[in-house]
Image (tube, rainbow, N blue to C red):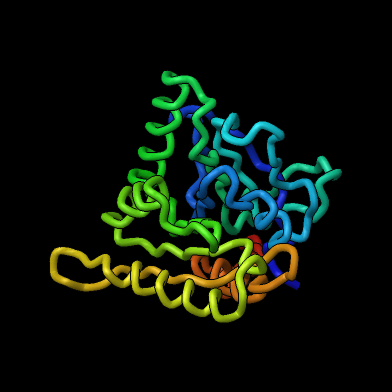
Length: 237
C-alpha cells in the first residue's frame, strides 16, 4: 500500500508566519487552476475529498497541508497526530492563472507562493502539474524559475494525457524533457527535473508518480526503529 494513502488534513495557512513549525520534509504541488491538481492529489492519496477543488477556480489563496504518518488513515478520524511519527507534509499550493482574483489578492498570492517555494528550508521538492495539451505556460515557467535556483528537484506531471493520441503523448513527453533539460546552473550542470504523463480518467502514471513522490521525501526508506528503553539500574545495596 502506498504511504501516500496515509494522508490527512493537517492545517491551512494564508501567511508565511503561520507555516507549520515542523522539521519533516515537505513536497509542494503547484499548477494552473485548471490543471487537475486537486484530482491528482486525491487519486495519489486514494481519498476522494482530501484536496478540495473549488467551483470557482483560482479563488483559493491558502496553502493546505496534509500529513503523512503519525495518524490513522481516514478523513473522518479526529484522533491527534503523533508528531514523533510524522514522516512528511504535502503542501497543496493555490492554483494560479485565473483573472477573476482582485489585484491586491493576486499580489498577496504571488508573494505567498514565491516566498514559500524560494525560502522554505523544509521544502524538499516541487511537483508541477501541467495540462499535457498546454504545458509550460508563462505562469508555469515563472514557477519553474522561482524554484530552480534552490537546486531542489522538480517533478512535472503532465495531466489529462488521455486527451492526446499515443503519438502526441510521446512527442509531448520528449519535448517536455527537452525543455527541462535546457535549464542549467551557473556551472552548466542540469537541474534535477523530471517529467511524466498522467491521466486521472484512465489511471495512467499513478504508480510512477507515487514512486517518485515517495522517493523525493524519503518515504521509500523505512524510518529507524526506536531505540529500546534501557533497563533501570538496580539500587545499590
